[in-house]
Length: 521
Image 1 (cartoon, rainbow, N blue to C red):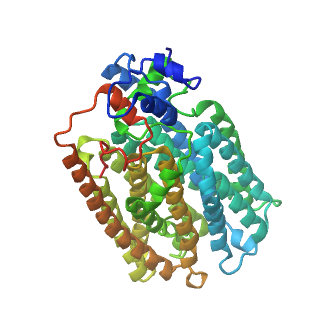
Image 2: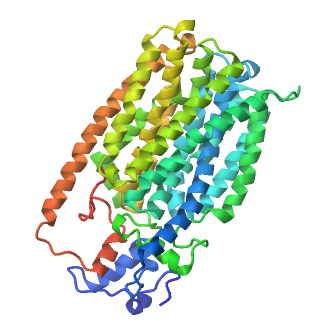
Image 3: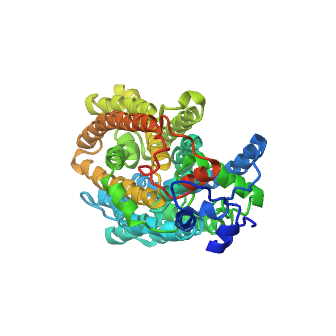
């Protein structure tokens, strides 16, 4: 039978296909059922598939990287820039022009994450049910249109409404990209790929700062500088988003830029992941497993505390630098280096993880990334601001973004260590809900009465770094203990044959159910 993946297999086709249902402890009928209930990959793979060479795999990987990484880098970069326009807008007068008072600017930042939070579970369900690439494309265009429409907002109420819907439409990007990463790359490749597309947050920060600086010099009495930012960047997003319909594939099973054989290789090479490609069936049992899995909740807490540091890293950077005594334009330009430091660090860390020396060191590197954050927070909290200490404070602002590399590696733990498609999507909803809650709460710790130094916010950031170091040390021991237990279970057990291995790899088993899976540390 041709493995095209263009229609669902019938029971008769499974019987007559190349899938040889060998004698195992599982009945013949149950194995057939696994094809229907299992991963979409089972509908295109079969045992008659001719083995591929290392050169073929390298060629397929190059094609995947050249298409997917570039697209994901641009999408994530534009998302970061669009989301960050509010920070630049603060530097260029939105607080006075929109007559914001008290904590209203902080609330504008939070409104984005309120929309993101409320949309998180529905968006993960929709990504499981519908083609991922098309779903992301539609949301990309809608958030660009929302940002462009924000140019007409001149009051707190209208700005807050626009920020809310911006969060709703952007809520699919990070969880969607984690799913895409786990569906296209091997587990040992995922951390480096996540690091690359996540580094867009820093890579785009530098050109964005220059763009913001240039837009601010537009002389037009009808629109304020922040309105030009919203309008121009929103329209750019709409135009680019419209192109995604044709250039962002839904999965390796249907990717048009690969040949038929290359698609099979792209799926087959993921067999050892034991996390599948995609499953359209929403399984309540996997939801319950995620809710009862302490490892998931440890990661959820880690995501929460990491994102409690975002306000110091991103949202209030320009205002804090301006508080050191710099002009508005200088503050914007000095907000560029932190993004460069972040991007370089993320790429270095993720590249190291893709080498043999990086194996088993994900959590160690996460902890290492938090140390500069602690040092920078202590400087900002304890060293008084004066003309003589400007350099020290700028050093702290520039280097605190090193901790962003920890987020990329944390996302790779979700991609690599959570199996079962429903469990992965639901866990993603929990992760990014924690991300939202933290980003809603965090700006409120930066009290306007303490501007421009925000001592309370800096203290909370320092505490968050310390808490996460403890959490990740604990998670390392939990993963290691579980791996050791599975190694003991495997002693003396005969290895599975190729067909059983195929069924196990793509039967949509969770990480708790599939005892042959080992957790990445």
